[in-house]
Length: 110
Image 1 (spheres, one colour):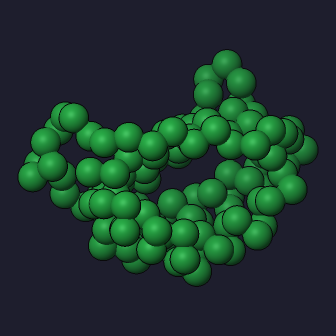
Image 2 (cartoon, rainbow, N blue to C red; image 1 turned 90 degrees about the vertical axis):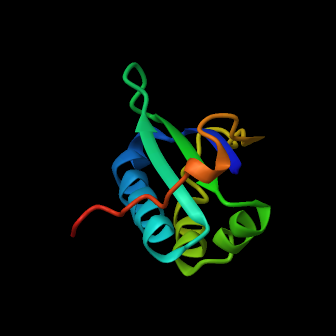
């Protein structure tokens, strides 16, 4: 699996709007992208302006498809000026669970 871990630091005055836009992207990812197996949005308990993303895709091609999805393009354009610092994306591969144990994440009920 192709994994991203992304710490994001948000300007405080944009936190609520950022989270709203981030959830739109996360929900769209797990709902509309068969290659997106997990998309977690985590708010740091000691710094509410620090958000962590944990994303799992079947492969790099599925991640590249994500970067062209309408919900991602909308998110990227909406939040582009709200970062306190550039995101520091870390790419990796899943060691556990093994690849054949991954199943798609169900989006929350609306």
